[in-house]
Length: 496
Ligand SMILES: *Cc1c(COP(=O)(O)O)cnc(C)c1O
Image (cartoon, rainbow, N blue to C red; front, side, top):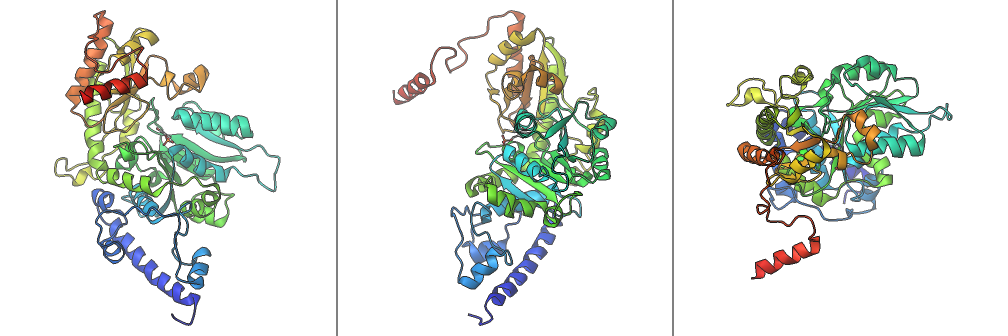
């Protein structure tokens, strides 16, 4: 061992940092699909440390061991790269964080860092909370944040109950997010950040990110954007001036549906007039090594690696699902039992032109098939059934291919009635603000052939013709059978 003690490790760390930085630079020059497939896991790392494993290993270990007290001291004072303890970091978590930071900054010179969390909700909590600390010079000032109303139901509850009601941190609601004056008029010196989700779940609200980022920066505060629905394959808010991006990694990013996960991706040097230096310079690293170390909401290594496998094909999946969704939206629009279809991809949608500026299939200009910039509008749409809440439930209950589930971004098509599911808890008033009537069905189109999804919708909508639905069709029993009977019956059938 080198007698110079800790310096031995500092020098080695500096060499490895140079190598790693050079590797990231090289990756940054690759196209989106190549980054999605390889991320930050290099051949060198595989061959030198992981027995040549071509897939990122899952490090199922609570902690990292050190060679001696010098290495331990250098590591725990964050002077050398380390992961230390899986509540804070873990190599498998880093593979996910590294690839997300690269994808969310794709096509720009921006640098970002990422902190992966156990769920989308914990990502939102992790991203917002550090800004909501008491200002020691003005301890009595009531803090506020400005956020759109058309947001995911869970976010609505986190903002309305956990922050506004329980902690007296005012949520100033933006009702029409396209109205820039409305955003600006809500801001005062106690506003800590602006927050928006787009395209919003389920109502497809959309706003001009670039313009809202300018308003935030004029007031010295960050803009946080929930980019779950579009994913970096269609939209990269950091490129348009947003400071921090939220992903419910559970959704679009992990289409196979193995796990719940989230991520906070922040560009370096966010706008924040009241932040301490590290928080401003590298918000992702700050979260990971300080608040999230102490609060403990980060992701597990198992989930992180499961998700990597889904991310590799993100771009082509988003292309396919978007094209299918447009076809299905056009079918529904013409249907006699459908009152309204909301999909940003439809030309008559009032926000279609604005959405075209932002929602673009990444690298479409380098795609042999397209050779030019092509708009894609994602897999999420909604439609309103004529005849009110009961008719809507009847149609919904008639679906035989599309799963009834409160989920989105799946490789399998899923539908829900938000008023009785994802957006139930916020009550009628909250639903009115978010524009979620009881006859709205949210449909998230998967990777099946779109004609089969159209057939399913078509037969389900036939209930409204007054025809009897074919009760013999579903192989599951409806109404009456308890889940345990169901499971047992299936088992008995299988044995016989
Ligand atoms: C589902 C969802 C969330 C919450 O994510 P979880 O992983 O379920 O915690 C946040 N934002 C949007 C837009 C979502 O769809």
